[in-house]
Amino acid sequence: MAIPIKNKEAIARMRESCAIAAGVLHQLKQLVQPGMSTQDLEEAGRDLIASHGARSACYGYTIGSRRYPAYTCISVNEEVVHGIPSIRRILRDGDIVSLDIVIERSGYIGDNAFTVPVGQVAPEVEKLLRVTREALDLGIAQAVTGHRIGDISHAIQAHVESNGFSVVRDMVGHGVGRSMHEEPQIPNFGKPGKGDLIKPGMTLAIEPMVNLGGYKTKTLADGWTVVTTDGSPSAHFEHTVLTTERGPEILTVPASVQITNFKSQISDPTLKS
Ligand code: MF3
Ligand code: CO
View (cartoon, rainbow, N blue to C red):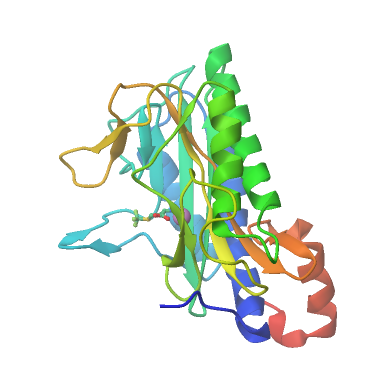
């Protein structure tokens, strides 16, 4: 199977879906406070997604015989990804909480994630968040026409490991479009110059998952929640990125700051939401 190349129409739809995913994530981030439950964030996320005329791509997402039961993925501390929101999980000062928002509208999917500190976190945890964010930026900077997927992977791994943290191996970034997971896989570890060639018109979800301790993870008995095996905290930042002849363009930016989208709305009335 080849990596899907999006045409102009598909790119316009991806822009919209990604702007919505980014807007929801941005609003959800502002709500995080000590004392609230992850279910509180779930309900806010569910309502925000609906208010944008979109659908959660997580709700009912099926792997084998398991259906994901929530509208958002909310992962606290040692939870890496796919945390199921719960009224019993209360956020405390010093926690970190990863919010992962995947939405579908008009047949196209936008995927992004961000890890938020709750109140005051330990200096090493603050560093974990900073390094993971920087690793995402460095990975995106490699999403250049003519480079290979391994260049993205390597940039992320090198930055993370040189800062004394580890990258998760059991889960990877991915192409995204009509489906949440398309080709190619984008590991957060690898060798430069290896893997598929990057061409214009690819939409890639780049998503470093970084552990303060070892790289190993396991899945809890709920069938979804991935945690670090050593219980160390884990951070997760993700953007959906469009590759172009002029370099990478981050699509998961809220509409109010998406300059290209703003311009195209003036010239192309079909892009109006
Ligand atoms: N961003 C996650 C991913 O790419 C979202 C998973 S949604 C779930 O895998 F439905 F699997 F929970
Ligand atoms: Co993803």
